[in-house]
Amino acid sequence: MNYKETIEYLYKQLPMFSRIGSAAYKKDLHNTIALCNSLGNPETTFKTIHIAGTNGKGSTSHMIAAILQEAGYKTGLYTSPHIKDFRERIRINGEMIDKDFVIDFTEQTRKLSEDIQPSFFELTVAMAFEYFAENEVDIAVIETGLGGRLDSTNVIKPLLSVITNIGFDHVNILGDTLPAIASEKAGIIKFNTPVVIGETLPDTLPVFIAKAKEQQADLQLAVDKYSVRHIENKGAFLVCEITDNIYQKTEKYELGLAGTYQSKNLCTVLTVIDTLNNLKFNITQPVIHKALRNVKKLTGLTGRWDVISSNPAVILDVGHNEDGIRQVLQQLHSNYPDSKFHFVLGFVNDKDITNILALFPANAQYYFTNAHIPRALPFKELQKLAAYRSLSGNGFDDVNDAIKSAIDQAEKKDVIMVCGSFFIIAEVEDK
Image (cartoon, helix red, strand yellow):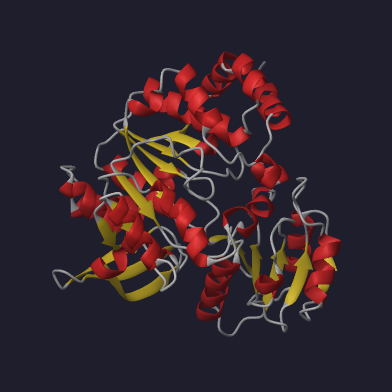
């Protein structure tokens, strides 16, 4: 098979959560363990950092990887889902996995895959481990898919575990209360392994404290260590003044990610770097500053408050759950207080979007659409659900047609926001 045929085989033969939803989710680690055993357990040959959370885990993973890379460490990065290219999921020093490796690995594991029927995610995790081992990375940043306790990535024994925050998402799998979701995420906390928690809530903090105590894991709370003094948007950059609460020292960081919500992730990242330095890493402030300014260039991160055109502004963001959308809307109102908003929306069909739709303003213009995956919520159904919230607009089967219509109807000072799903962003055509 060539690369294109290999990717089509993976999509067709292996159940993929991002395309079909919970039917693809395997509630144990047996397949991942079997795959890793067959490969000689490559995940044991390099150091790892394990990252979970409802929102922000992708951005946090990319920032940490960028800093490690800039510090001179050969750094693997595993994230999901991809936006444009499957190879985005697996990178070394920002470079996507080699196409030939994807082909060869798929062939190598084909018989075992046909025997044990792993999910797409399970096989991809094993592929990442093998790629990082073969290329002898110094360290790999590993993002969970969803949850933590039963996530396929949870076969690693990391130097450090990180949980960014807890919110309502994937409640049909992880539980419908914040403590239940926190408990699943806390499953990545390992014995005698430090853990950094980004944001906490009264309902979730006791879960993390109890799990860390049970595992004799040193617990670091980013909110205790760092606080955001001031943030300012400057085009494609976010200028953050962050105070070290222990030493009462304030530092200004220029972050190459424009979303104001990234300031919270930055506090988590800085706490992680402090912990790594305590573990005998050598990461200096000049390295941190340079890496944060250049995070997109270093690691290829996309889909986070990407302003792809102006007059009118067109912004892409992968915000897709209640907390993520709330942060997007807050920044819109802050950055563009006098503008009319046009929302291009598309969601998946296994998410309760009632509360999400309630967040959107009734006085905006809407363009309802859907991605072309089995898991997508058809735009006509989205239109009906939105109408109950007094949100009205036309429907489009293609996100690009929706964006074109929005541009045609918008004035130069208006703002077009495209959000609701990774898969909507994935189908936006490059300019």
